[in-house]
Amino acid sequence: MSRYDPRKIEEKWQKVWEDRGLYRTAEGGEKDRKHYVLEMFPYPSGRIHMGHVRNYTIGDAIARFLMMKGYRVLHPMGWDAFGLPAENAAIKQGTHPKRWTLENIETMKRQLRMLGFSYDWNREIATCDPQYYRWNQWIFLKMYERGIAYRKKAEVNWCPHDETVLANEQVIEGRCWRCGTEVVRREVPSWFLKITEYADRLLEDLKKLEGKWPERVLAQQRNWIGRSEGALIRFPCGKRTIEVFTTRPDTLFGTTFMVLAPEHPLTLRLAKEGGKLSEVSSFIEKAKKERQTQRGEPAKKEGIDLGVKAINPATGKEIPVWTANYVLYEYGTGAIMAVPAHDQRDWEFARKYGIEMIPVVFPRKGAWDFTRGAFEEEGILKNSGEFDGLESQVAKRKITEWLEREGYGELKVTYRLRDWNISRQRYWGTPIPIIYCDTCGTVPVPEDDLPVLLPEKVEIAGRGNPLERAEEFVKAVCPRCGGKAKRETDTMDTFFDSSWYFLRYCDPNNERQPFDREKADFWMPVDIYIGGIEHAVLHLLYARFFQKFLRDIGLTSYDEPFERLITQGMVLKKWVSIGSLLDHLGLSEEDDIELLKEKLNSMAEVG
Ligand SMILES: [Zn+2]
Ligand SMILES: [Zn+2]
Image 1 (cartoon, helix red, strand yellow):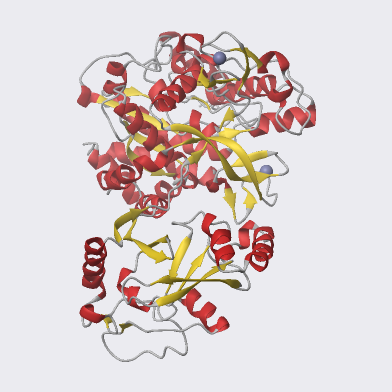
Image 2 (cartoon, protein in one colour; image 1 turned 180 degrees about the vertical axis):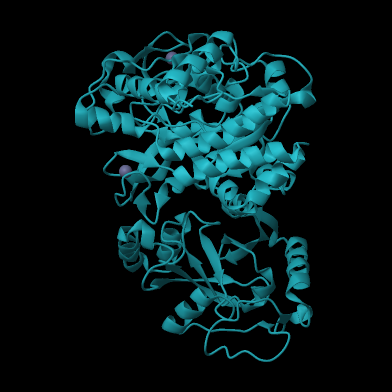
């Protein structure tokens, strides 16, 4: 028997497959005989590495298996082609980001073809292609129309090395997720997407994914959205009121002081009324200088009494109002009701400054020594008037009802999730389709004028935003009044690009809309999505948000994009999952499954 010569044999057969269009996916057929198998598309960083091969082999094996079973299988591939590395390469090597990216795509595509994966290359997309990113701009305009995209000046995470704004998710332990530089805070006008408006649905619909997505990913998303139910309480303070949000209204009777964040707009005003303006001002300056990463968890809790009193609505007693470095303005209302007996941070602060402590919740069994620390668990109420003897759970509800009756507050749900800042002060991304006119203000680019093309002639020097210096690009005519105007120079976070690419694969050449609804409805949802666990909260949450938004504007019928999610580690370590996955697909022939496992196993050894 002659030796297996991959060069000779594979090249020959790959050409035959190609010529016959073996992996080209035709439209139509029965919905329940379709299968959409998708691997997260790669960033064209240079070459295909074994991590890619492992990921794509899982998808390839599943796709081929299903094709052989007679399913109509959509198995596309494309490129997440915008982003920082292309620009960094431009700075280091003097190549244009576009050239660098397109060359990498060529290399990586050739490598993928050599591997013989069953992709329908006719559906290939690259997010840096104007035919793709014009639909980013179109979606952005739809979001703008509906108030989902909005601009505000915001204190943002700023990477001094990349000179760009980072999303909270891109800050890892106070450092830039890409380059590791320490992140600082800065005020920049930025474009946001109101993902918080979808918080409830994003959370609620996770139930539909139970048993289909890894539990770990579901848990991370739940935690990221961070729903908490509590009470919004208004404390009278002279002729003003101080609003706080608490998840522990059952501890209201134990509130012995209040704390405002240094940045809270009332802090200086109250200090002035309390005759403490100069001391408080210098305290605020000092607190602001503290590194952002330390805020909220400062090494030393420090504060200052504003010299005014608020009224605890439950007891009618006067309580002092402070400002302190351990309360964050970005979190909740930026003010807290401090309950030293039942919150350890308040306990430490009260002890340091000699503020009164009143225990109001006690363990169901045994006793608690309040001189040693706060009792933070739930229990039985005491020292709480008509609510004495109630369990915390019941007391929360009853006290909130009482507050509502008396006009001091109401039930409130809050989320940890924040709106998504999509502005990047960078060149290699989708231009945000907005024009600023001195007369008309902020004017969206009319749909017919899309795409707003990224100019090719720019100077990429490594600092600031090259688009700001691209005069021809910046100069614009106002679409409303025809007067002189200035173009927005921010580009979009690349997570925007990857939030809907799976829909574009359903109809990749559409020039009139992002995709045809019928075509998308045939293929969607993606039946099996394969990728890395590191995307548990970023990409996978944004994609779910976009799917819901696009459904709301009538572009698709489905509100969840990915029916099943496989993370690589899970497949390789738990063969049970692949087995049960195939069961779920109605594929029960043992031999075939064994073959599939074998193929995956051999890949795992290489990887
Ligand atoms: Zn950085
Ligand atoms: Zn105008």
